[in-house]
Structure formats: structure tokens, C-alpha cells
Length: 74
Image (cartoon, rainbow, N blue to C red; front, side):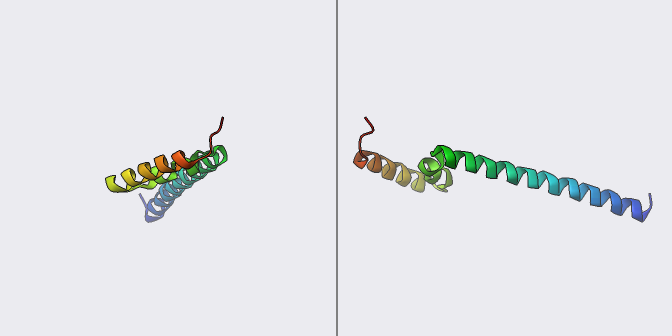
């Protein structure tokens, strides 16, 4: 195998990897837009990004408090 073939193969591999990463990012962006359009993102964002157990408990407590003060939907 020549150096040129090695470089070409490596370039193709890197381009395939970049395409895969780009497709994954586009998929996550589309998922985020869908969740935002459905209103789910705003309601669940805190729970999804909470890094520690303490933060998850704090978000849960705040959510419960906000539901308590929210106007009735009936």
C-alpha cells in the first residue's frame, strides 16, 4: 500500500466519522425542536440537565411548588 492510498483511506474514514457526527448533531437538534414545539422541553429541561442527585431533588421540589401555584386547567 502506498502512502497516497493510506492518506486517501484515512481521509475517507475521517469524512465518514465527520458525517456521522454531523448526522447525530442534526438528529439531536431536530429532537430539541420537536420537544420545544410540544412544550415538553420547558417542562422537563431542569430534570434533564440536573447533574447531581441534589439538583434533581431541588428541581423536583421546585416543580411541585410551581404546580401548586399554577392556575387550574379545568
